[in-house]
Amino acid sequence: MTSLSTSKQPAASGRGSLGSVSLGRKVKDRTVQGLVYLAFLLALVPLVSVLWTVLKNGLGRFDATFFQFSMNGVAGKDAGGGAYHAIVGTLEQVAISTVIAVPIAVLTAVYLVEYGAGGRLARVISFFVDVMTGIPSIVAGLFVLALWLLALQFSFSGFAGALALTILMIPTVVRATEEMLKLVPNDLREASYALGVPRWRTICFVVLPTALPGILTGVMLAVARVMGETAPLLLTIFVTKAINTNPFAGPQASLPTFIWDQAADPNQNSIDRAWAGALVLILIIMLLNLAARLVARRFKPAGR
Amino acid sequence: MAKRIEVSGLHAYYGGVHAIEDISMTVEPRSVTAFIGPSGCGKSTFLRTLNRMHEVIPGARVEGKVMLDDEDLYASSVDPVAVRRVVGMVFQRPNPFPTMSIYDNVAAGLKLNGVRKKSSLDEIVEESLQGANLWNEVKDRLAKPGAGLSGGQQQRLCIARAIAVQPQVLLMDEPCSALDPISTLAIEDLIAKLKSRYTIVIVTHNMQQAARVSDRTAFFNIGGTGEPGRLIEIDDTSKIFTNPEQKGTEDYITGRFG
Image 1 (cartoon, each protein chain N blue to C red):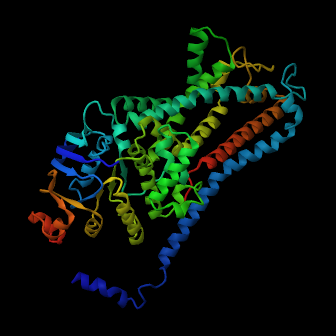
Image 2 (cartoon, each protein chain N blue to C red; image 1 turned 45 degrees about the vertical axis):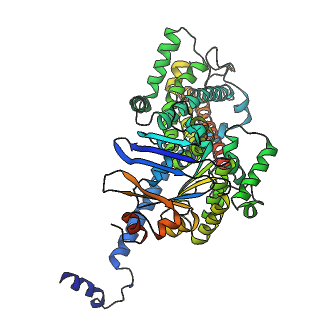
């Protein structure tokens, strides 16, 4: 009875069954489309606003002097001075922390996905990686301060700062790498095993290269995150206005602490330097991102 | 080159699940043996026990004996990695390595096992691609990615990759199920050509294919849901398809199954 009446309905409506989309659906379609665009624009507002403000205020001191000089002997009210010491410091600290964090993190992820999968140890590690992801950055700084500087009696140095950044970097890279390794189809591992290739070679030459673009993206996000960290650096590298190219001895500057230091000074010249420092920091992160994308494209698995 | 496989009293498990029960058979060298049977009857599981790929799955284990000529594959001193170099495998879905070129895909098994000499690699790659009837189609684009080939070409690439490590036995797990009839024909021609050099075992759902390519056919079945798969009978293909011993085999191949 019911099936008979429903099958008759299209004919009864007087239109072909392939008739035009009903008004209700058109309205819904338009509404949702509008909402999606609105959400997109809202998300763009802070991004564009930040970029615009930093560009507008930062370009004033974005000059050759800024890249050639430190703040040594320059007082807050003086014009001139630059961030050379801070740029060198940031690049060294982030490079060191990347060199330490990436191997540890990638190997941890390899263990979690390829060896430990589902085991007790893997679950425990996974739990602590999650906990580490949530560590406030200042706690990482305090940890290094307590262990490296106070307990082990090392002095303030770029390296101590790099250690704090490493702690912040490891969990993000582990998570990103883990997700990427899980995306590698099992077919490929089996294909490799079936050729008589041992497991570790399969991981090195089949699994990791396949996941490489994603891993690089994850590493870049982590680098971008730690590059802007201020709090842990204040506790570990201290503050200096002079150039110190040796990351292993003595206080070192960094861009975030440079910005923090300059912005705290009420003189306009200092504030201009702080904006220029922010602009440089954003540019470095953008350049690194661009470089990582180029590298990732180079290794990208070719589609059909 | 080719070796005889003798299986006796083989059981395979996935964790607590008994997947196949008490299988004994002989696979003759330089011939094609086809495994047929309904889905879930353990054909693929059994195939994977022949090169110790079964145990790659967590919790999976095997009991019983698989003799390759006079070596027991499951002896405690045997390295499963070495077994897989002798017993190659081609999978249901073509799975070329996505990061590698056509050339590197074929050379993968050798390169990853430490062969580095360019001249011998070149030679083996060409030989293997010719062996897989793919050379003429790809010889001008060896440096292009393997994933850029068509499905049938990818499967032949996988066969070339498998034979490049010069195994004694080639296991094929439904190698044509993802391919169109023309590519299937190309693979079947290839199987006919390869059997002069290798022992070939092929799992297939396509009974015409089993009849076309194989010399001997084994029929597998399960007693019921949740029960382990068993070998019902194995015999010359012509006998299985015209005058099988078992009623179950006859029902299956004539389509009166169940």
